[in-house]
Image (cartoon, helix red, strand yellow):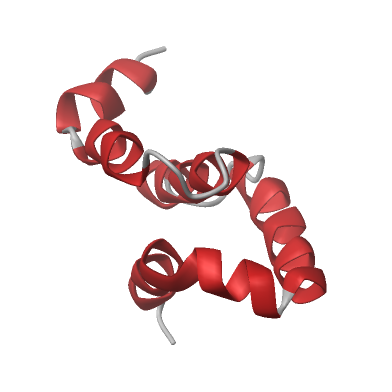
Length: 82
């Protein structure tokens, strides 16, 4: 599965997977946290990983407003200015 497919799947059914496979999801999200810190990954991939971490941190509530923030190109550009 490609990264885009995994991102879409977790946004769509992440809450259900958290209930059914909590231990595996914990491991996955630990890996995502590590990947966000890996500067060899593209900024856009790390941005999408941050969205998933935030969705889970908010217990999959307010998903629309969180996703709206991360899907807005202006927010991505502002966060990536050095």
